[in-house]
Amino acid sequence: MNIDLRSDTVTRPSAAMMAAMQAAPLGDDVLGDDPTVQELEAYTAELLGMEAAVFCPSGTMTNQIALAVHCERGDAALFDEDAHMLFYEVGAPAVIGQVLCRSVPSTDGVMEVHEVERRMLSYSLHTPPTTLLCLENTHNRAGGAVIPMDRLRQYRELCDRNGLHMHLDGARMLNACEWLGIEPAHMASFFDSVSICLSKGLGAPVGSLLVGSADFIGKARRWRKRLGGGMRQSGLLAACGLVALRDQRHDLIHDHRRARMLAEQLADIPSIHVDLAKQSTNFVMVETDLPAENWAHALAQHGLHCIPFGPHRLRLVLHRDISDEHLAEAVECFRLTAASVKPA
Image 1 (cartoon, rainbow, N blue to C red):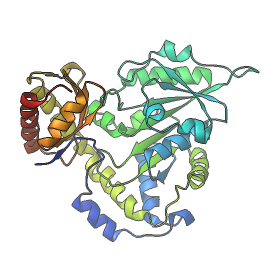
Image 2 (image 1 turned 90 degrees about the horizontal axis):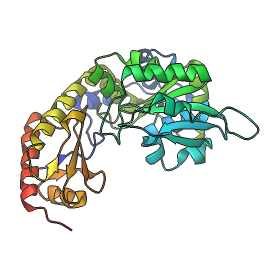
Image 3 (image 1 turned 30 degrees about the vertical axis):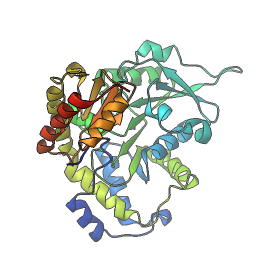
Image 4 (image 1 turned 180 degrees about the vertical axis):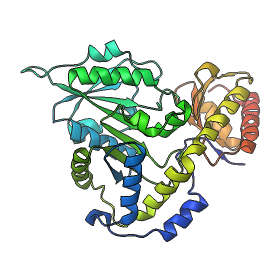
C-alpha cells in the first residue's frame, strides 16, 4: 500500500494528457511559434476574463515576474504574514524584483482591511511607496482556506483608493472557485494579475500561467526570458495544461469531498485532532499530541506519506490520484499509528 498525501503536486499525467502530448503540434515558444502554447495562453486568458497570458515553468516564477513588473526597485509590497511568496520562494522578492516586503497579520490567510491600510506608505523622500498588494487563494499555510469574495472586493476598493495594483497567487485559485461555485473570471476580475498552477490539483506535470493585461504580459515575457523561463517545444507541456483546464478542473470538487470525508473519520481517532469547522477544499490539517515528525515516520511505515507542517501538525492533501477506496486505507493507517507511535 502506498498513499501519497504529501501534496497535490505528486499526481501523474492522465491517459488523456499522455495522448494530448503525443498529438500536440509543436514549434519553438522562445521564437513565439509553438501553436499549443499559444492555444493554452489564449484559453487561460479567456477563462480568467483577461487580455493575455504567458506560460512559465513554475508558480514561483510567475509570482516573481508579477512582482518585478508591478513594482520598481525599492517599492514596497504587502503580503499576509503566512504568504507562500514570503515563506517558500527563497527570498526571491529581494533578489529578483528588489522589492521591500511588508507583512500583515492574518487569520487563516485573511487580513483585516484596516490592517492592510495602516501599512500602506506613500512616496516621499524618506519612505518606499507601497505599490502592490499580494493575496493567496486558496491559502497553503492556512490549510487550503478560501478568502471570501466580499473581502476581495474590499481589498480592491482599498487598492483603487490608494493607487495600488493587486496580484493573486492563485496556485490553487481553481480550488477556491470550485469551493465557492463561481467562474474563474469572477474571482480574477478583482486583480491586475493572477498566477495559476497547472501541476497541483489539476494534475498536469509542469507549468503555471501568469495572466493580466496585454501590456503587463508583454513586460512579463521579457522577465520570463531574463529568468531563463523560455522553453522550446513546450507545447508538450501545454497540451497537458489544456486537458487540465478543459476537462479536469471540475474534478477538484471530488478532492474537496474526499478531504471532508477523511477529516470526519480522522476526528474520531484518539491522540489526533481535526478542526472540522475550518475544513475546506482539499487539505486536511491534523493536530497531533505527540511530535508530528514521529507521526509522519510511523505513518510512512504503514504506507501513508504526509508532511509535518509544524511541531504538532500534519498536512494531508487530497488529489486526483486518491480514490474513495484509498480513504479507508488512510484511516486504517492512522488507527494503526495511533496505537504504536511513541514520544521522541
